[in-house]
Length: 165
Image (cartoon, rainbow, N blue to C red):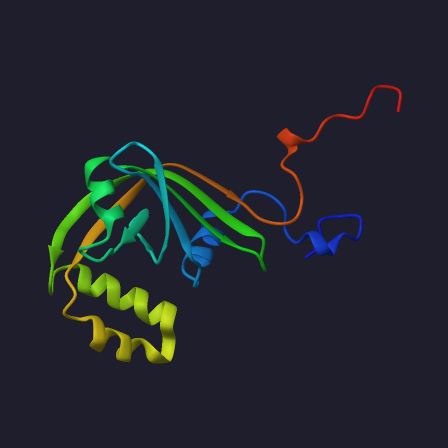
């Protein structure tokens, strides 16, 4: 892709369209989720996600400390990025508990979709080995979402050249 001046190495630069966001978030990309621990400190964990219905489904195991942190303080941040495509999505949102830890709840369909997307051919083996593990189901509703792609600075970070140059 060319951005002008023959700088194809930059890729497509700027905010992503909704179609580009949907395509990017439908690929295999790791999400880093930030929440607050019980003492108010930032707690960041890598996790899988499912982007649907305008937000992010997250399926932690019952014993995940960060699931309890999200239940106690729903303010979260997410970062999903890809070094190869230089695409990134940053989210501030609220985590809502859809299900407390259980076996066989609504989370199963979401987890199955995620596992198949992330693990491909070994998904069924993983699902068989993990089906008796109780899990939560959270939905993170974005309050703010920022996107970017390409190798360049956003205009707000560039300074104008001095006058007379």
